[in-house]
Image 1 (cartoon, rainbow, N blue to C red):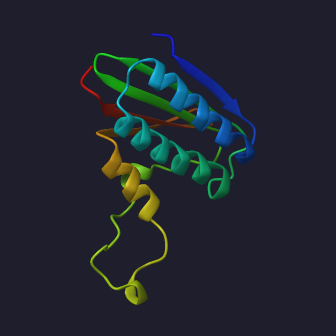
Image 2: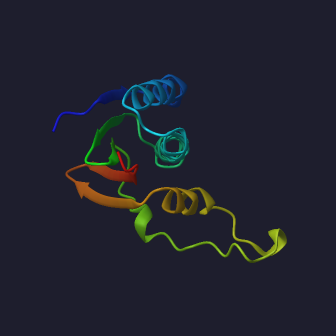
Amino acid sequence: MLPDISRTLGGREALPALLDDIESGLTARGVPAAAIAAVNVALDEVVTNAFGHGGATRVEVAARVAEGRVTVDVGDDGPAFDPTCAPEPDTAASVEHRHVGGLGIHMVMKLMDEVAYERRPGRNHLRLSKTIGL
């Protein structure tokens, strides 16, 4: 199935325009505002991490709406990293005793209904899915 929205980013500076395009495209397809917000927050986190922490130089994003779901595929050329295997942060610990990092991945996992990772030759592929009930 062809994506409804597809973009290639060469750096983090292209992220705001991508998020605007995602919001506009999903709104035009009748996706509820709460689902759009969740997708955009998760996508912001994933793309920011790919460029900022993962060392990616190119990130491809493809989003589609079908069968009551928004599905976003994110591919990058950074080193292998499977966020689905990251340890869950201790959110009950005080700020002083909390390990730095991991909250963004935790947030993505909580916002999305499904998150799946696959390493393909030289590339990370992450699929984010949110049920919208259309």
